[in-house]
Each structure stands twice: as structure tokens, then as C-alpha cells.
Length: 221
Ligand code: NI
Ligand code: MN
Image (cartoon, rainbow, N blue to C red; front, side, top):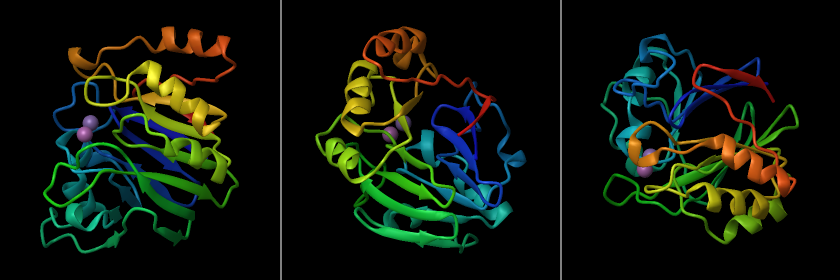
């Protein structure tokens, strides 16, 4: 399975059969590694409706016909021309063709009235479990996620100001008992400037593994 980082909080998970695109903010993102018109995907997963996550979702959904997985209030933001949806809500599980997907709590505002921010825990058919928290604060139920799931990769924001900063993301990784943490949501703007290398070195002293991926780079999970 391939993980490709497109910048900010946008990434693609390619199982070889299906392509899952997360939080496609590409237009207007000076660090974006791909143009919205070039993205190919079968699913679009949205953590919440802030512009730096919802971004290009309507145009990509319309062009590709990808199934949009999100909270109903966020689905309500799409134009009528987009019709392929999997509405979910917190605590719900969706038995998807690529595996088992659970929508979980995030501690963040949603960007749309009545909505709520969410994260995703996906147990892929390939046997890999990935947790994407979306924008969030550190919260205690991450410990529960770590007990209920065998998380291989935790994809977490480290930018601070709008979300967890590096210190809290490190605590989160420990609570989640994640084998590897992939940081995102930093350096897009000065207010979320971070040095992930510092974090990686600090984490290594605590035997926490951090994988830094630059926009445009891919790794095999
Ligand atoms: Ni946000
Ligand atoms: Mn954000």
C-alpha cells in the first residue's frame, strides 16, 4: 500500500485496487504537490469542512465520481451535481470494499453549522491499520483507540495554533500505541511553522517512530 503526501493535510492511500484521497486542499496551497485536476481517486474522505480540508473536494468529486465519505452536514455543502456519498457519523463503522472504516471523535470545530469534526480509523484488507485524526486537540480517548485498535500508522497534525502541536502529538502517539507517526498540517503558513526533524529526534529518545514525508513524496506502508 502506498502513502503519498500532497501537502498540508492532503494525502492519498493507494491499496493497489482503490485510491483514497484525504482532505484535498490543493488550490491556493502554495506547498501542494499536485493540481486538483490531476488527482485520481475512488474515495474522498473529509475530516471536516474548513477550507484547508474541504478545499477541492467538490471539483474532484464531480470530475472523478469518487464516493465522498463525510458527516451529513458536510455532505450538505456539496453542489447537487455530486451524488456519490457515504454519510457517516461518529462511532459508526462502514464495511468498505478496501476494509473496515470507523469514523471517530476529533476535538475541533467543523466549519459548518451543526457539523462536527471527525477522524478515521481504517483496518485495510491488506492487514494495515491507519488512523488519521484530522484537525484535533489531544484528547484522552486516543488511549482507548490504542487499546481497541492495533494502529500501524497514526497520521497527526503537529502545526499547533489550530491543532495539536508537536509535544501533544508525541503524547498522542504514545496513547495510541502507534508503531509509526506521520506528521502533517505544518509549515503551510508561518503560524503553523514547525521543525519535524526536532520532533523526530526527541521522539527517537522515547522509542517513538516518526516518518517525515515531504509534499510530493510517497512511502510504502
Ligand atoms: Ni480545521
Ligand atoms: Mn486545518
